[in-house]
Image 1: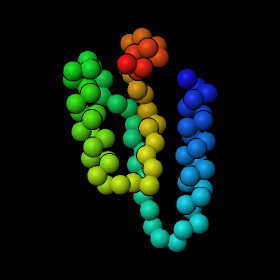
Image 2 (image 1 turned 30 degrees about the horizontal axis):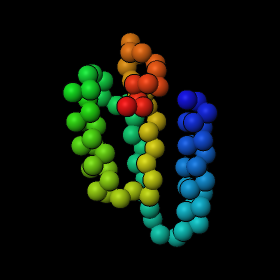
Image 3 (image 1 turned 120 degrees about the horizontal axis):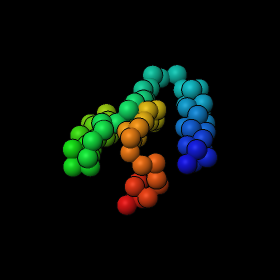
Image 4 (image 1 turned 180 degrees about the vertical axis):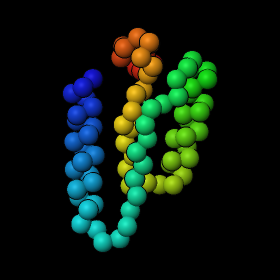
Length: 81
């Protein structure tokens, strides 16, 4: 999981470097911790947030916070469904 996160960060860093030569302004989205709770509670809120971000058409987005609560299981199986 850490290796995947590092690969994603590397791709985003390269993308940011490649657009930094542009003279026009751009924006990106950095979002932090996701809402914690059951899937029924959290997913609709997160999906609305992502839809809102997508409407603004940022150059790229990066998630920089937790994706689960500290008390929940740390398993890829939860996110592979």
